[in-house]
Length: 111
Image (cartoon, rainbow, N blue to C red; front, side, top):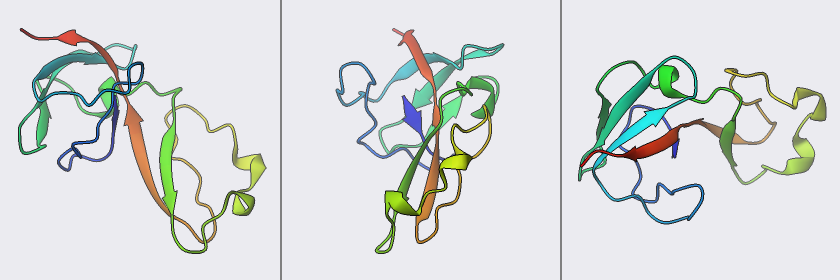
């Protein structure tokens, strides 16, 4: 599961393996570190964790960001900025607007 900020989730949130749209319910999530929590995703896209913070359940070695903009191009990236250190924000790329994402492992659904 790839999430952005504490804003409501877009309905296009995808399961990494199947690429299926995740239904709105409760998921057991972890970042494969110390905290495992229940993530509740509501119909309106809002969400909350039963315990911990988004950082606590983020898998730090996995980094993800969306780069957008009219002048945004991969050739503008500085290759020395990669790979990104665990827990760090993705690098700024000239001409691009950036949205960082957190990567969570979904262990199962709460029934």
